[in-house]
Amino acid sequence: MRRQLFAAVLAIAAATGLVTGCGSKDPNVLRVGTEGTYAPFSFQGSDGKLTGYDIEVMQAVAGKLGKKVEFVQTPWDSIFAGLESKRFDLVANQVTVNPDRQQKYALSQPYTTSDGVIVTRTDNGTIATLADLNGKTCAQSSTSNWSKVASGAGCKVEAVEGFVQAIQLLKNGRVDAAVNDTLAVGEYSKKTGDLTVKVAGKTGQTSTQAFAARKDSGKLVDDVNGALDALRADGTLARISDKYFGTDVSK
Image (cartoon, rainbow, N blue to C red; front, side, top):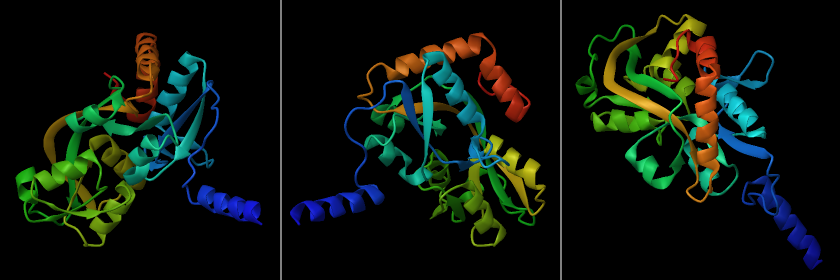
């Protein structure tokens, strides 16, 4: 009876994510956390398979390391908790490099460089700069770098799971703006042709994005950096970048 009860509790814990995997792990497999809902970086393709710029770069890195990749789709606001609890080895989801993350995590060399933009409804003529966000409401993933940019400008943050939800709140008139990556905003505009929202201005900040690992991950980040160097040298990063953006954002 006691064994049955223990087995039942263990099954419930595993189903709810309280058990994060134990025992030996295949050294030839990289477990990678990613959203799967953040086009064009990590999203479901028309065939239902996970694809995107970050996905292809990570697959190329793993190829250089002679490893397979197992992606673990996780909402952005819990992705670092998943990393810390060892659900996966790396995060591949446009992790912006900043001092706080450099202190907490082992970050790879950057593989993306981009600018921040402010998105509003097309009929809103009151917002053009970060200063104009003071006293307004912005839809942001609460733990994202762009959320800090928005709140730092005096914008009240309405927490959302990701960029798609932010745009919906904006379109519905529940928030005044959203601050995000120009590449993600450009992809949304290209795919949807949505004329009800616009890029109202730039944040004036250029950011770099990297893969994130735990501080106790040994030489994993060194290995990833070596792979990125090789992919940059043989033109693979430039080719993947051109496929998704028409330009090389990996520089």
